[in-house]
Length: 371
Length: 267
Image (cartoon, rainbow over all chains, first blue to last red; front, side, top):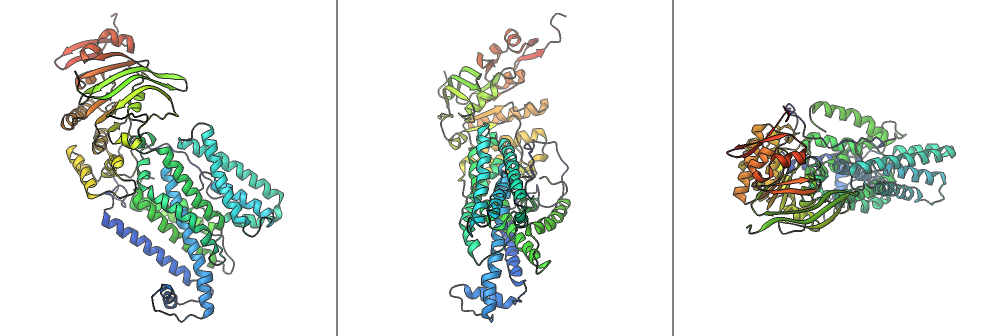
């Protein structure tokens, strides 16, 4: 299952000197303002490119020029019309774009939440699923599926969302119960316990109702399927709040890197920063998981790749992770729906299949750089 | 005697899970003074510094008594307010990987910056000035994890300098350094104290150095102040023998008493 790997690492002490590497920007002078703007522009450009490419790919051929004209024409006050037929227009606005936009929202949210979790727990293996969002949502979704629609048509996402929130809430309650609410290590361990518990419950339910095994499994592996704009509309408010809160904490996240004691001596309250960011990231993650299932790897690979390319400062790391995570998932979804067309490969399989080798290449090129 | 007191504690008691770490400490430090806090391991030196820096949470420990530092009550004031007036140089600073010296020093500005806005040109200039002042300009672009111990301690001091504190708390700032670098760092702290009118409270293990740099020594043992005064009055064989269970001889030098360990007092 994606995202259950957990590592607990102490903050790296001031180590002995390490030979300097002339690799990418890691450790080099921090990017200046001009270079920062350029990098963000490049990331936004790759997202725009990915969105356009994904919009064009599909069984019904849509021309670049027509799609661009149609999109431009949708902006109020732009007098451009395309030559798309009504049916093509329907495909573009009701099928392609909602799915592409949902992919961008899910990918951006997972990557941003992953970057925030890694910062707040000072743990390179942290991902958005660290504190039990995934296993809680998995249990909730499984219960909704085996109950066979007794919860109504919106039952599955609601159950997954509630399960995800309940998982993280249980983790925090458990962590405080043993008196370590303010220690990152205790919270992470509580997350392990909660995840194991929820996974056990989910496995048991799955065994009891093995006729639903296939649909449970399909959900767990993740799938972007849309019914018009309703999924995007459902998750947008949660994602918007999560993104704003996380981006506003970029400086606090930089400070958290020096450890709780020193961060406190610099005027930050680590326990509060951790709680606020966990709540924000959990809201956003639970929302996207409820419509996409469990898509692994994005939350861990994208932030680390960005870190290796542009350094560890969060004012660049957070927005870059969000933009590139969005672009990555949009492209992964293109592969998911075209590789075995007309069948679909679960997108979680694609992200791991493409992400793992890519990540190894990045790691190799940045040899000597620290995680 | 002392015009203004920068630090004052009265009957300061700290209990951690029922164990008494500080057992009623009365301490007064005048503005601009350098007070050395000495005492054996576990005497409560770090706890005292953490209380003064506003780091001890009421939920971690029970704290009784009064504390004032730079005009604030660190047990009640907001963390940010305390951090604007009090800087702490920790015993073993955590250096995040991948951060340059310049970005690391910039962290010292945290209590002065709005959490939302980006840092301004003036903030950058403040960092550059601190780097210049501590002779670190050449290292500004280097990863902080690649520094030697002496360089790192200077960089941590630069972070404290941009914090613009009134009181500088040092927790065994030189215990990881060789003797030359110990002297260099302590000379630097003394220079900053003179130039900025800083008050310095430093927990130290090396008694000789403590006596040479501090105007006054406070000897802690078992959570209590057992001696408080000029180095020559605190560094006595009787006191050190009793408190540290050590065999030492005191040698008078031009810079004050030097503490010399003795292999076997009966030989």
